[in-house]
Amino acid sequence: MASAGPRFPAPPVTTTDALKALALLLILIDHVGHFLAPDWPILRVIGRLGAPIFFFLIGFARSRDIPWRWLALGLLLTCVDYLWLGRLTDLQLNILFNFALIRLVLPHAERFLDRSLARLALVLSGCLLAMPVVNPWLEYGPEGWLFALFGLLRRRSLEDGPSWFLPRDLAGMVAFVAYAVIEQQDYAFSLPMTALLLPGLAGIFLILRDFERGDTRLQPPAGLRVILRFCGRHSLEIYAVQIVLLAALGSLWSTGGGNNETGDGDE
Image (cartoon, rainbow, N blue to C red; front, side, top):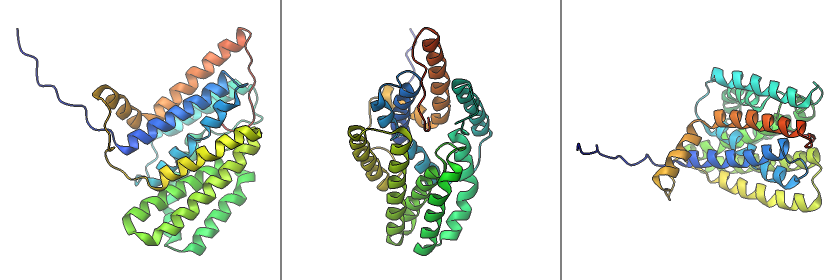
């Protein structure tokens, strides 16, 4: 019998892989609440923690390419949302269009900032003022822009040192406070649910504030490493597939006598 060939260990999991896997898990919980269990607000509270991670990573990344699949998947998921809602009212362009817009604008924002706190304050104020106009038609709207700016400034703090620490922290705090206020209003979370949301967002802020790229300190078993690396490299495709599948399950549940209620707010 021929001997088996050498077995190579699975490549290490990176911090980006781990962060994307965490975001996917949180967003999966959110979408279960959206499509299958609208009477369980705790699922939406947990789910609120996922989107900031993706926007942060969009800002943190050096790449500014806009893959065509983002636009294709964004169009598909916007259509899925329309079919779920059954109306144009309250329909928003999918988050992937927001990612593409950020990739397009962020290089100009980076050049404009140029280490200036006054310019940063101007950009942050502009994002806050734009929310009532943009949020109704673009998923997460300027909330996402604030998190992307936080990610950009975190990368600059790693590259250029302490001069970027204050801008990084200011952008992060504005992003999380604005997000907490908007999401609480959109979902009308009760006081207990809000009390769970706030420390969760604070925890995500601390994780992102100190984020660095590299291999994780603790490496999981080989099988789990493969899964986590797959999540890291195909996160947006996984995000799209889960929405389509859960929307289909939700429609079947509704047809079978379940409850097809959808609350206000983003997916």
